[in-house]
Image (cartoon, rainbow, N blue to C red; front, side, top):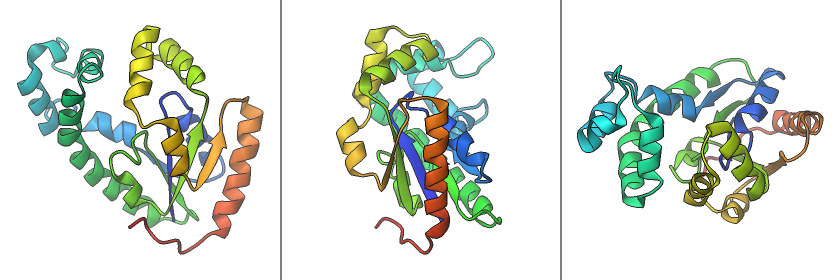
Length: 204
């Protein structure tokens, strides 16, 4: 069984995944794969550089993520173009990695993805878990973690699926607005539930 883990930016998806990992559950992070597909030599990076020029490249030829982020979050057309270039490549690699993990002995595996619903990656999973925090906390965490101002942090949050819609599509919800002890308890409870589940159909 594959559990899709998602949530808005700075909701703590990786923290939750590591908590599951401590219970013996392996995971694939779509963000890690997204970084891989824009490494030097990858077709996606070549396409991005051809569209935006040297302003999105660092001196060593690697992607300047900050510069690209400023472009795509200011212009929805550019964001959609970028997704059209990267999402198919990300999906292909995720499918391969999930198949490798599913062949192992773990009772289930996780696909951690901020764009689980938006990208169609939810079709790769049997069940969805949304990590939820209040929007104000998302903005504060994003500004602090990513060294951006509040205006840009709000723009990043606004560009994602609305919180209410994300929650409406969840099979399970984990509130991550409290401390680590509360989080560990919630993850342990979900782990017990998931170990009892089997044979769930994929989303049509």
